Amino acid sequence: MRKEESLTANLDWPLFGAIIAMLIMGLATVYSVAFNEDAPSLFAFSEKYGRQLFWIIFSLFLGLLVFLIDADIYRRFAIPIYLSTLVLLIIVLFMPAVHGAHAWLGVGSFGVQPAEFAKISTSLLLAKYISGLTVKQQTTGTVLTASSILLIPMVLILLQPDAGTFVVFTSFLFVMYREGLTFDPILLNFVNAIPGVRYKETWVGSHFIPILFALVLLSIITLLLDAVVFHVNLFSLDLELSGSSGVIFGLLVIYVISWLLMQRFSTRRERSRMMVVLTLGLILASMISFTVDKGFDMLRPHQKDRIELFLGLREDPNGDDYNRNRAMAAVGSGGFLGKGYREASVSSVRSNHVPESETDFIFCPFAEEWGFVGVLFLFILYLFVLFRIIIIAERQRSAFNRIYAYCVAMILFYHFAINIGMNIGFAPVIGIPLPLFSYGGSSMMSFSVMLFILLKLDAQRKEVLR
Image 1 (cartoon, one colour):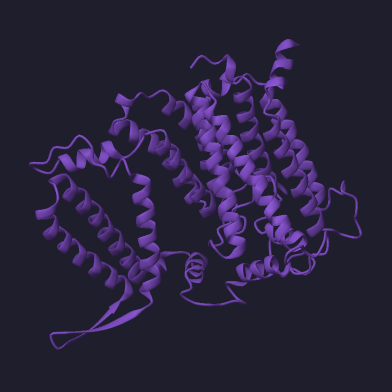
Image 2 (spheres, rainbow, N blue to C red):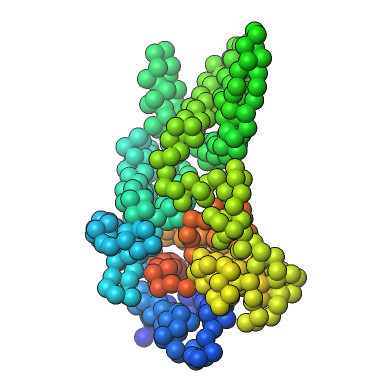
C-alpha cells in the first residue's frame, strides 16, 4: 500500500494533467466534426466519436496496466518487445492492403498498426543499448548497431509503405546525437583509409546534425531549381542547363576556389573539413539531379504528385492538391476568435470539403472553431508537454530513463510539427496523426502506452542507482 501511495505521490501530475486535457480536447473536436443528429449521444459507438471514446477509455486502461508494472521490466525485456514488433511488421506485409498500404493487422473493422507500437519498442531498445555504452565504446561497431536498431523497422515500414511513420523514425537520430553517439567513428575510418591521412576525429561526424540540416536545405534548393532552365553561351556554345545542374556547377566552382585559397590561408585539417562538406554537397546535388531527371518516375504517382505540389513545381488546387488547399482554407476561415464550437463549415465531415478532417486534418476543424486564440492555446499545451518531458528526462538518475524520455519527446515533436505543417501548407501530406487528438485506435493506444511508460519510469526514478 505504501509503495502504491509513493508511486502516486511521485507521479508527474502536470504531465498527466496535460495528457488528459489533450484527450478531452481531441474527443470534443471529433464529436464536433463528425456529429450526427440521428445519434447525438457520445456513447453512440456506431459513430466515430463513440468509438473514439472507447479507444480513449481502453488506452487509459492500458496506461494503468503499464503504470502498475515494475519499471525495470521495460529495460530487461526491451529486446523481446522489439523482436515481437518486428515479427508483427513482417506479418502485416502479407495482410490485405488498406488504402494502398499493408499496414493494418486485424479482423473486420477492428485493426491496429504495428508500426505505431514499433516506435515504443525501438525507443526502449535504443535506450537500453545506448545507456550501456561508455565514451570509449562509441566505435564504428556500436554506431552501426544503434543505426541497425532504427533501420530494420524503418525498412519494414517503408515496404508497407508508410512514409509518415518512416519519417518519424528519423527523429531517433537526434537522440543518438544528443547522447554523443555520432557517425564520427565511421567517417574516421573512411578518412584514415586515404594514404597519408591520420586523424583522431573527423569533425563532420561530430557535427552530423548541423551538416544534415545544411544538406537537406541544399536538397530543397536543388529540387526547386530543377524546373528552371538556364541558357548559357560559353565559347560560342549555347548550353541549356537545369537548375540542379547549375547548383552542381556552382558547388564545383566553390570547391576549386576554396581549395586554391585554403592552400595558403588555412591548415590541413581545415581544408579537409571544407572539402568533405563540399564533396558531400556535390554528391547529394548530383544524386537529386539524377533522381529528378531519370528516377522520379520510379516513385508512386501520389508520392510524385505530393512532392511536386509541396515544392510548388506545379499547381492543382482542385485536384491532387485538394486536401492541402482545403485544409489551409479551413484554418484561415477561423479568424481570430473562431466560428464557435460545432460551427465549422469548411472542415466538417458533412461538407466533406476537407477529407480525413477527423484524423490527419483534425487541426483544421479545431482552428476553424476556435480561431487564432484556440490554436495558440493548443500550441502552448503541446509545448508544455514537450518541455515537461525534457525536464523529466534531465532529472533522471538512469541513462536508460533519460534516453527513453528524449525518444518520446522527439516522436511527439515530429508528429506535432509535421501534422500542423500539413494543415497549413508547410509540409507535404504524408499521413501523420496529431498525438492524443486525432481519431484512431492505434495512434491513441501507442501514445498512451508510450507516455505512461515514461510516467512510470519517472515515478520510480528515486529507486534507480544509475
